[in-house]
Amino acid sequence: MFKQLLVPIDGSELTKKALKKVAALAKADGSQVVLAYVSDPTPPMVYGDSTLGYGFTQKEHKKACDSYAKALFKKAAPLLGMGLKVSTLHLYHPNLAEGILEAAKKSKADVIVMASHKRSGIKGMLLGSEAQEVIVHATLPVLVLG
Image (tube, rainbow, N blue to C red; front, top):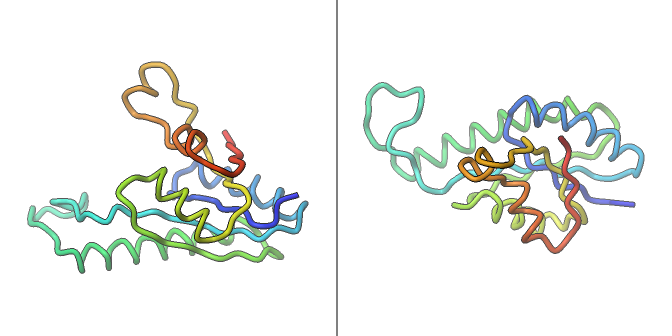
């Protein structure tokens, strides 16, 4: 059915659980899996683990993001199990949903498979839903796992 699955990851427990379902889907269809991570291109004023309180250069920020993405991919790939063709894609975009859609285009995916927190009501208004934004703007199927 699907040959190229784009799977955005963020390292959360929800993503880890979704990867098991992705593995089953990919194995059933003989699909390739592209794990994607989207970083914000703008460096924050302070990283969470820093007590120094100074700004970071674009170069330092890119290095930190690349390192974090590599660590996420290294942890995520084994959760898919053996026997799957898995590739990774790390890109920078200021809007997460648009970054996911850009990743789908770059990877030539025929479906986006992503986890959702199922936020609705006031939580959904305040925190937003990346899955919902991807669904609204996608030109290809989006499979949402909860």
